[in-house]
Length: 215
Image (cartoon, rainbow, N blue to C red):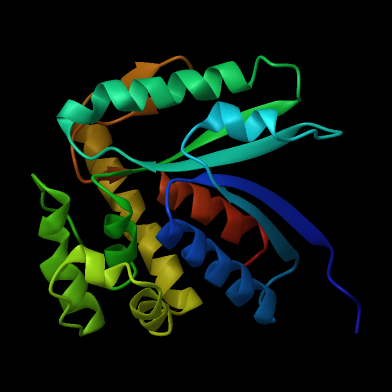
């Protein structure tokens, strides 16, 4: 049996749940016979995209996806600061290009989309809790409990690659509705919606699955 070639992807993420999820996804893709390629995720927990780029020394053009949250309309300046760091990272002469992998309000939106539609606007990230519990048949008392490593691992055991494909499709529907009803904000080359739900992370994951021939 021929050994599959490996495609490498680089990420900077804000927290542990994002890192655990990407590590899980890497294993699922590499374990399936559907994939035309193996993948390797290089993931660092780093809120500052510029710091992530400075720590690298790539020999060729390298794309890094920054995975982060836009937690409220009041969070827009923080978002713009993050995007400014991404722009600066591309100008330090290290052959780095940054892509956007945001979730609005939070990464929990992406996790819910694996099992359920999540089309209603939220005013606080804690409002995802009931839908998380419903999606995964759990009874977490708060998001802190859900984010404990053993509990998040339990969530991932209930997810399949088919669920990931469904999450990509649900994310596409959300973004199509935003395109039809709202005007995105722009900072540099990057666009994002201040309205929630919205997310570019679904497109990022979808592109990886397409690269591997899974969708």
